[in-house]
Image (cartoon, rainbow, N blue to C red; front, top):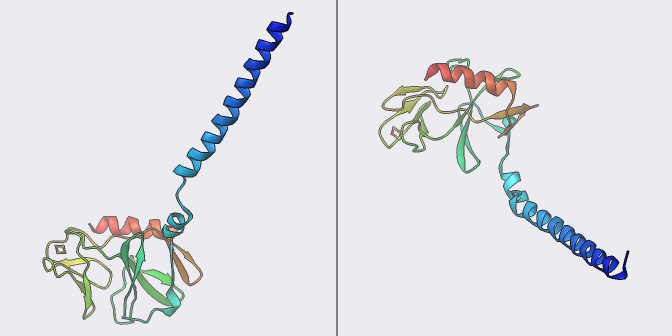
Length: 168
Ligand code: FES
C-alpha cells in the first residue's frame, strides 16, 4: 500500500468523522427545536383541589386555554351517572364552552345559561333547553385523592365520558 493511498484513506475517514459529528449535532438541535417547551408541557395539565370548592358555587379553571367548570353539587341537586363521586360529595366537571357555537355559559339559579342563543344546561351539564345539541363536554381528568388533574385520562373519566356520549 502506498503512502498516497494511506493519505487518501485518512482524509476520507476524517471527512466521515466530521460529517458524523455534524449530523449528530444537527439531530440534537432539531430535537430541541421540535420538543415542546417546558412551559407548554406544564400547560397541558391543570390541577384542581376539589376540597376548596363550595357546594352550589361552581368555579371556572383554565385548561389548555379552555374554561372548565367544576361544580360541587348540593344535596338537593339531581344525581347523575355523570357525577364524579369523591367521598360523600358529587362533582360535575365540564368544559365550559356551549356545544352549540362555543360561547361560555354563565351559572344562574342552578343552571348554566348561554347568552348567545338561550341554550341551557342543568347542574349535571346536560343540555335542557335551546339549540345546544349535546351536554357540555367532559375534559380528560384523573382523580388523585381530593385533587383532579385535568388533561390526564383515567378509568373514571372514560366511564363518565362514555355515559355523556349516550346523552347526546
Ligand atoms: S352558542 Fe350557546 S346557545 Fe348558541
